[in-house]
Image (tube, rainbow, N blue to C red):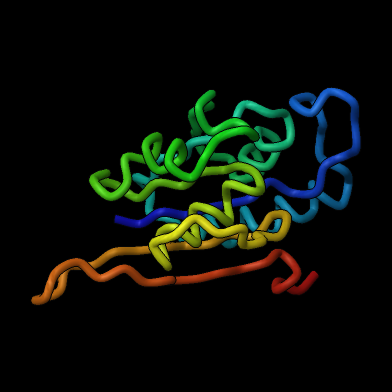
Length: 152
């Protein structure tokens, strides 16, 4: 199974957390990362998105269908996210578009077996995969990319 964790792009400050839109810089971040993701993601990838304005706007930059999932909101835990993604049993790759701290917590849980407070920067994507080997499933980090990696 492939799990892609995409943190939302830079958002405006605001009193109502769920309603904070992307900044102009955030829209550029999302567009750059979405271009790479669109070239790289399999066509059957399920895309799950937190219900906040900033995550929806980030996901919209990809111009693919996605599902808003209430359980992966800003207060979600790593376990909530993995349950929503049906990790590790999903038959197709899954991308989750969400927030800190759970983006880093999901990555740390999968890669170390413990929930840690790793930082995933805004609009960064982490791609974690499993593969069958003779001695069992093997988990590996396939990619970590930042929108700053792509030239303007």
